[in-house]
Image (cartoon, rainbow, N blue to C red; front, side):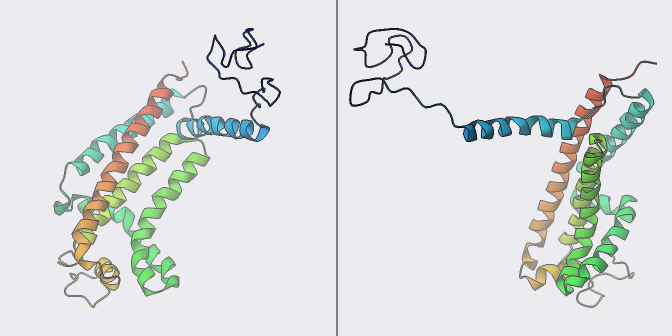
Length: 248
């Protein structure tokens, strides 16, 4: 008898293979039942799963066969700026509102205000939340666009920007009860009419106003996490590009 697993020839009386230990399943007449081969569906499923990893590796870490040295130099300089700048934000406590004092706050502000207008079509509560959604969605749209264009370094920089936006909104969330931050109208939340302070209105309407500090810390922590991931992502992409530099 031949083992159906390792094909070792042995006695017909064996209940399991004396070489590989495979137990022998027999039919009513005592003949060894050959194990069924995997179905084509299972094989196709396995092949599909195995094909996912290379797809995402190429999507997230694509590098051209030859990288222009000047393009690489520009990315390296930008990466260094984002790294140093990002650590300045990370190491500064949220209470100082250093992110809100940065000029990037004024870059994010038009997207914040545009979000109010766009999401205002969905009602008063969504209009208030729309400002935050607007400034968070723009970096993520840029990230996807860079990935589609096979530019993972640009996508990593967009992820850094998304992290910075999470850190930018955290002090605003944190101010929902105190309302000490200055709003666009030149007054604090306490001096303005109810609803002018986005996060006071958002949290009060859903009964979560007492959790403003907790939600702010979550937003700030998520921003830090996204920045750290962007550092690693951009650094690895630059390392791969360095290995493909085109010699002049």
